[in-house]
Image (cartoon, rainbow, N blue to C red; front, side, top):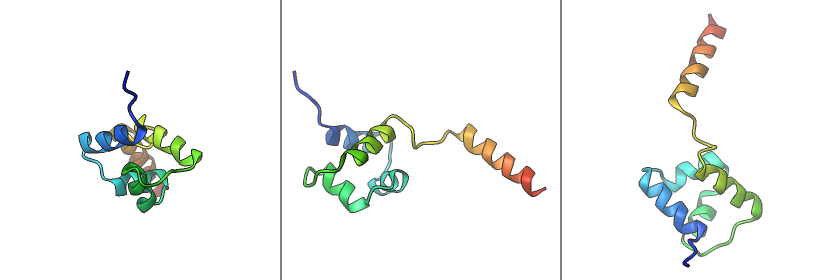
Length: 80
C-alpha cells in the first residue's frame, strides 16, 4: 500500500482550497520559506511545526463565518 507523504497532502489541501503557502505560514506561525521548502521536500521541519501543520489541515486555524460574526458583534457591543 502506498503511503502518502504529509507534504503531498498539504500541497493538495492548499490547492484544492485555494489557499497559499503564505496564508498557511501566517496562520501557523511557521516561516514561509521554511514551509515552502518543506512542501517541496527540500527541508525537514521540527516536531512542533509538524504538529501545527496537522492542526492546520484539520481546520484548527480556520475560523467559520459564524465565529467571526460573533466576535464582530461582541466587539461592537464593547465599543457602544
